[in-house]
Image (cartoon, rainbow, N blue to C red; front, side, top):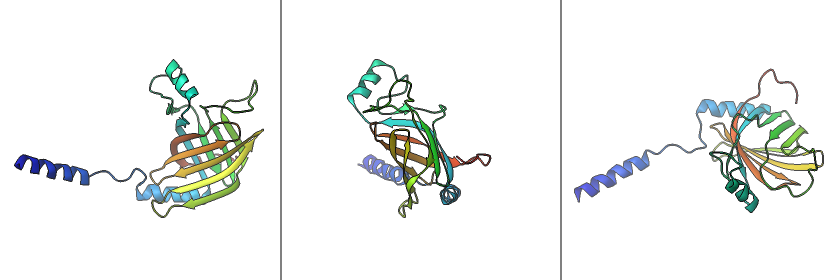
Length: 186
């Protein structure tokens, strides 16, 4: 009985010493994020693609085409140059796309999600609960229209959700940082 009591106390102590929420960051990181959002000047290095689950994505994963460490639901993009940049109301992006294309995209067209231009219907909201930011905007490129949701967290992690007029939904995950001071207008 004594061993059970010691075990329960030990487990309670371990459980109460859990780490802080994944979305919290240091005070310095929070100030950096606040400054980046206030100036609308930041860059997101995209590390992961999280495509929508479908039978096509499962077939590709089962065929072994995605490479080691990848699955139909999470694809490693680290070091591949995928990004989203914002400078003022201008945004640009290059994001490898994994998923189903419903229309468009003839021969010779780029399969990635790419855009550069002014964000339309730009909104920025800060959550009072966790001090994260949600940035929403619309943008088009050639014949394709995108609705983009960006969530920036105080620990400088971020998520990007993209709804396209021609493709299935996809989400990306990465890290936000200050825009390089030598960057020119997008």
